[in-house]
Image 1 (cartoon, helix red, strand yellow):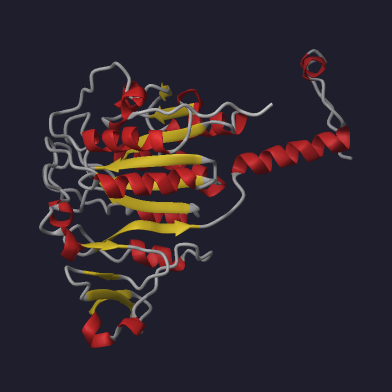
Image 2 (cartoon, rainbow, N blue to C red):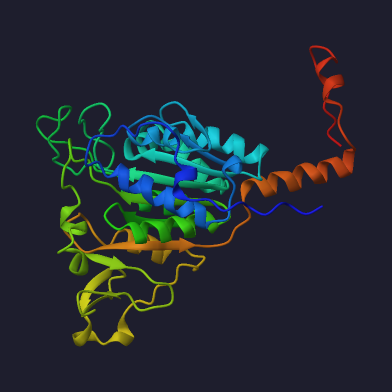
Length: 342
């Protein structure tokens, strides 16, 4: 018996009947629209799709999707999603989180989901602030940031979210921003198609507590000069006339160069499938702030067995060696168990 064809859907089918309640002008609206517009194109079923979130403004996302969803607890969305992914490998599981939720209280859960390569699509909304709790500094806020919780300026060194993900050996790492729906949709499409842990950072504006944080990058008049669009297999160039590029210096660091001065043959050619994460990590460190040219797109996309598949293989091999277990008998066998070493 073959599976029934996936029904044709529209954005309306994926949107729930709940009123969307973010602050007017919030970048979350554009991210929600991009996801709702993309899902009809993916050939997936609503009943096989799950959105899991933690706590924060972004965490309201499951309410607005006509799918299964879990609004979990602060920072624990990757842990809940891991459990679901291992028990229901047939599901499409999305994790929606924010920079505070993912990188502060949830930091440990995030890095272990990434290093294990659990089959999840993780969207991290990065507005460099705690929005839901009214404007405290977050793990991605820049040093010196004055907020309600840092009235004299933050002294913390901020996380670079992509460097964290690449350092945790995530097999898919990408960055997009809330001012370009087409780029978001294509990035989300690539992340969804990846088997394993896919991590996408979305630069997102909080127009109430951190308005304009990424304006130097994502403002329409700034994009050509400030956003470096990564394309697999192509020399890394940017600018209105592609007059600037990225080259590897003698000191082993990447640097911005004028193409006419160095020649295109000396530019770095982007290879997102490179097994060694070194180049992807260097690209994630190319810009030190939002006031410098910053790469966007897919940094890394490599193949590695996902955690659920490995676990199923291991359990299957154990069953072949020992035969099917009797869970009921085990639970009723008494207070102590003897485990054979053979």
